[in-house]
Amino acid sequence: MRSLRCAIVAVAMCASSAAHAHRAALEPCRLQGLEREARCGRVEVAEDPDAPAGRRIAIHFAVVPALARDKLPDPVFVLAGGPGQAATRVAAQVQPVFASLNARRDIVYVDQRGTGKSNALACPTPDRTPSLAETIDRLRAAERLSECLRAIDADPRQYATWIAMRDVDAVRAALGVERINLWGASYGTRAALEYLRQFPQRVRAVVLDGVAPPDMALPASFAIDSEAALSRLLAGCARDADCRARYPGIDASVDALLANAARGLRVTVAHPLTGRAETLRLDRAALAGLLRAPLYAPPLAAVLPHALAEAAGGEFAPLVALSTALTARVAESFAEGMHFAVICAEDLPRVDAAALAAARATRFGTIFIDVYRDACRDIPVRAVPHAFYEIPPADAPVLILSGGADPATPPRHGEAVARRLKRALHLVAPNLGHGISAQGCAPELIARFVRQAGFDGIDGGCLQRIPAPVVFRPPGDVR
Image 1: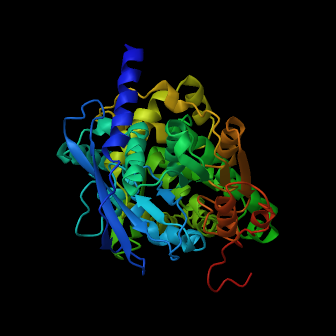
Image 2 (image 1 turned 180 degrees about the horizontal axis):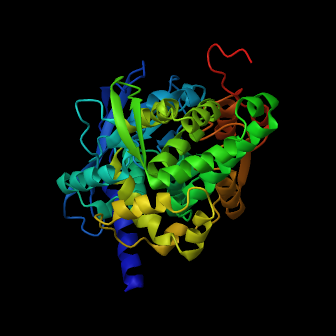
Image 3 (image 1 turned 180 degrees about the vertical axis):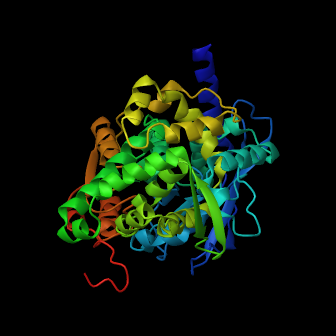
């Protein structure tokens, strides 16, 4: 049965590319935050690859055309993170990375199935700003997600990465290009690796920023990697004389806060966006989320010692504000249903006894695993091919970028993937967090790598010299 299924899948893959061999019709369009006009198109694909005559969905994409008339034939395809982000919605943040490459190459933003305009598995955005309880309380969030999924007109089983990458190849075929360059960040790196696995002959070069390998068992790795990032921050504070003097015993404060939250904390804070006072019940999971979010961005993490000291004294407003500064922006372009459709199928089944034990050994314990288990109870999944979790050697060169302070996709994942590839170079920026492509010299390194599809002259020393942000000092503090 397995071999028969594989044969059917292989035929479907060939049929998919053949069906979109004709050129896509592109129309002028605008992407949010970009001044330049783009060209937008769509391809229609089967929602269920095993039922090509069944329901069809449209995969939307946008092309930011090369500036030069004599453009090169190998565009850069952008695969967004999450999972759940739409590539076209993050174009304004990502496009500066490709400013140099865009001179002679098209930049293509593909909204992966389940995101953006590609039959988004997104929960309705309320007309008002959500209350803090709606965004922090995991039980309320799980109830909202369950209601949302019941209303979505889609089969969540068909939105896994290995299916979605066939759509990306359909876009490639519809654009009439033979080979492409791939750039993926966070979950987008998993998507890029899967495209490379399925279509190695179509890939010229790959950039992976913050590697999320297919076998990382994400809910468990969240605890392990967040613990490492938090411990790194606290140890750095202890080594810094000024930080140590301002926030003595900050390590013990974190443990005390988590212990108190396990018993239930009731706090009153002003909503950072509306200013309205809200009374919240913070359990251990909610507090863990507040602690973890600022770690993604070192400038926010630099404020975390102050926020933790304030929280230890009963004032939680700074900690809540830090967390929402990041999560509110991400939520605007995030398809929750697609996120859980992917993680419930690809990651949660791989959380075994060893992963549970490793998570329990951290401050965060099984909090993140429990959150996903609760959410995944109502989400149907289909079996993921075993080959999805493999990273076979490929001829295309792969540039891997990692932030040393990243709480989600730290260098250990990049290093593991680099060892499994035939041609890979792994560069680490020790003081940067989640997503480093737009920072410091990274855009220049990416441009040089893509131009030559190789590593000659690629020196990551400039990334190592990017300094860490200084520890936050409250206004008026003259100590």
